[in-house]
Image (tube, rainbow, N blue to C red; front, side, top):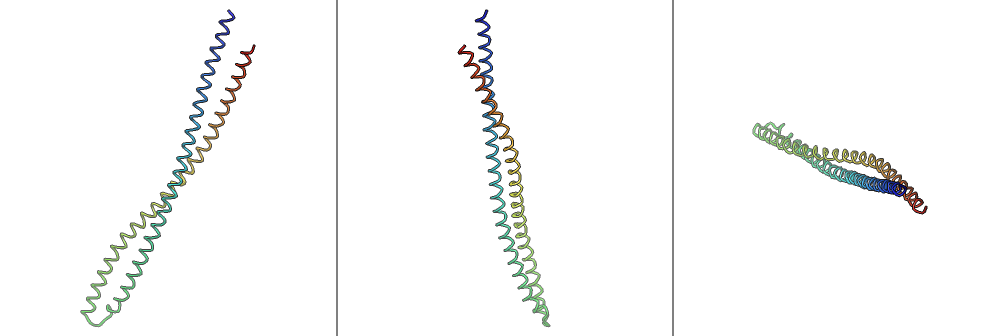
Length: 172
């Protein structure tokens, strides 16, 4: 009866060993998955920084264009104001028509430029949100990584202890 009992212990130990190895493999996979999440979060932060930088550059460019457009419009309007105050009716009418045309052109151009400016600012804000989201994900993933590594170390330690006990039983 003793040999059967030993076999039962051996099969139980072997089953526990397999289970422990499977648990260790799962823990290692979990560590790798969490490391991938950290990598993804870091990539998200990098992408956010790139978007933010691009949006800022475009916004700066559109703001500069709008400023030039406005100053040009104001210069032309100032030039026409002299003709608007003329005593000659024909010259005054021509200046009024020219000013109205100038105003329409300015409004159309400035509307397009302002829309582009808003889009660039929107891109910049999206980049900032992406950075924040990536940082939050990275922080959470780092916490998960420390827990997963601790679990992996614990399982490795249990595996070594079981191997030592199995060796000691084998020597007896």
